[in-house]
Amino acid sequence: MRVLGSEAACGTTSGAASTFGETDDVRLVNTGSTNRLVTITDSSGNTVATFTLIAGEVTFVRKARDEKIFAAHAEVLGVGVVTP
Figure 1 (cartoon, rainbow, N blue to C red):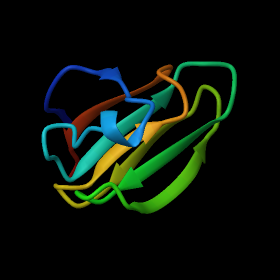
Figure 2 (tube, rainbow, N blue to C red; figure 1 turned 30 degrees about the horizontal axis):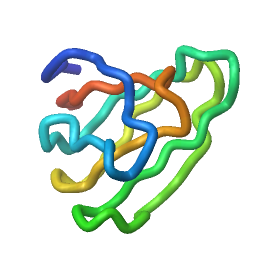
Figure 3 (cartoon, rainbow, N blue to C red; figure 1 turned 120 degrees about the vertical axis):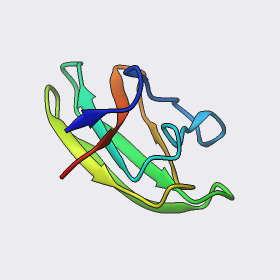
Figure 4 (cartoon, one colour; figure 1 turned 45 degrees about the vertical axis):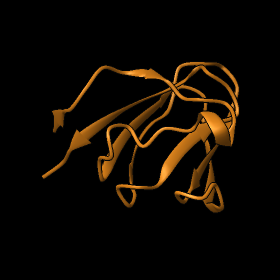
């Protein structure tokens, strides 16, 4: 895995969602002790998908470059990556 930027808190609204540098893959970690909802939107802000990120869990999401991600709480952190 190659990291393509600095890890940052996910936005908590559709308007604050991020493309994470228009990357295809994003590494997410829930640093909190509560399960959190993660939402992926298209470039117009329409929901494409949602999932629950378990407390303490790390996962990788593949998305379209123009799709954005936000979470129910800023304790979910993300960074764009390149995966093999």
